Image (cartoon, rainbow, N blue to C red; front, side, top):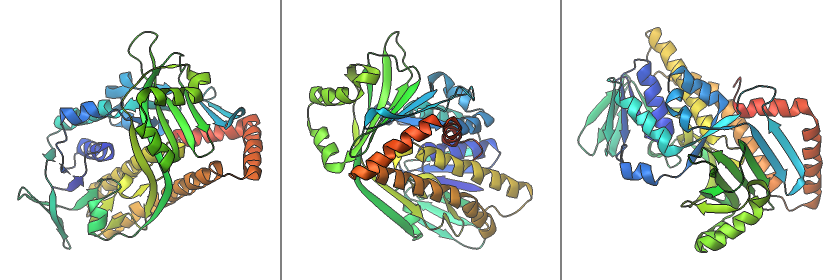
Length: 392
């Protein structure tokens, strides 16, 4: 084939589907069973899709398949420890949502169904990679099912603990925050009114994101609470009723009492960036290449910008009859993406440092900064456009 995509998470599925729609011959490999109903049904996570990513999905006729299950975000309220220190972001000047919240399982089912319709995409489920080699003309992949695959280019979309990254010894820089996040979905009394909240507590942010409700007067949101790892792990151990009471104290003024909590997950927070996003006939996208602190909710959209630029470059090279795995192509992709990725890593890393600071002086300056920004409409407009992924 022309291209092998390794990893069937959302980024891998999106890249394989878009390449397939562009008439590339693609093989998608994952060590797990991609279509496992059990795995899809137990995945309660949500994904925040920026407006810029929505435009990309629209371009390839994917968005309309998930739009009915997508909850728009029209307002973001950011609160710095007290309700008086706040910034309000809205889209009144744009008339489009800032983004959308969709359940992972819903999105994944759509992507798999669409992939199944395209004959030039082959899925290899439950195939573990044994060996990868390359020469001047192609890359070769051997699986544990004794399948030998050959392509011009291999795309590594196999997540933070990327086998591809390790196999080719691509150097990377790691950040460990000594923080963890608690993620869950919950039903609540008050209407969220398409509003997301980010409440900066003393050790990290607690964010709520509006979700699509399917019952009248039943309102639903997802929550990501970041704190010191010890505190989050202690929360994991307490009973669900006590956990509900603790969370209610923090979100009650905005969303009312909690009526139900779905299964929650805890995950440690780290960030990383590879020193380069490619090797010989190998390119990394999404979390395989980089990951950032979730403080701004932009990590997945950063990966989708990888997909956007890589597929555009590959299409241009294909139309010119050029080698899809050439060093020139891969370096061009790397140079196109690196500044955006590094900038977002730098911003999120330093935002976390500022808002986790115990310094009274820094907290006072932060509060003054919040009030200043909130009173300057032209600043909030620019920040909204940046968060939406417009012109990126």
